[in-house]
Length: 322
Ligand code: DGY
Image: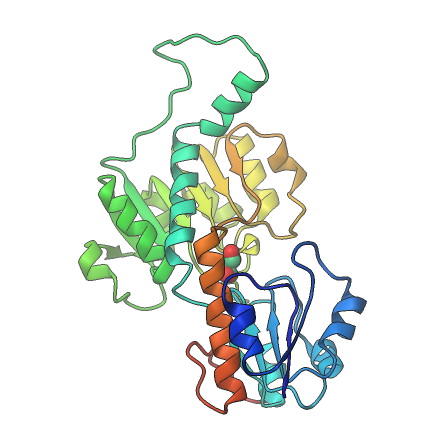
């Protein structure tokens, strides 16, 4: 029987799917292993189901051993995996696209609403027992209807956010490397990034983290945005330069932001913690029971296919071997 290691205990039917084809060894259901514990756990595995916080690099691959055939990340993002190192060893890498699109889009839209209508601020005010009274100028936010929703990366998740924006009466514009297949049905116009920044009322980020998108949104980009604009990030924290964002929010360069992801999770830039005009949630975009089950089951299906020598359902295409 092959050995399958899941670096965290998987929910849903995944354990059952895996147990039918191999001996399964799992990390904890909650909490994380130290690097040392992780490397000891994965030693000897034929397939590893990894989490987005596991750094899969040469050290990790050496610790697993030469029998390794697949790394099945339980996440759509795979910036934690050194694809070139896997390719050099002939290790197949898979991720979990599609199954988390709606859950993540729901959370992105919740952040858009929370930021535009100042929900975090209002909640904190009431819980702190501070005095308040209805007034024409009290806690005024911004409408969504009639505004432009700018999407950076109109793929699976971005297009679902855009569909929600359309339902709220927003116009959709996007920035992507190429034309998006979702653009026509969303009546979305493609713009260059600077024009998208300058004309969007809400900007929602859905790009994977790559060397090209690291700190894609920094001081220069924030300065191009409207002073009434909202920035939302449910992609990866490092797509934004956090200190620059904290400064822009403090100085009124943009109105507000909603963040689900941070560059150095679980740490949040201290400048952001002090501000009223940013909604902060702890990387919960895909965190629903149904979606987490589906992610784990897709990762398990990928693992089974790799062990059977079949094409996995959702491979990550490797870079050219150097
Ligand atoms: C992913 O799958 O990459 C998400 O960030 C998980 O929430």
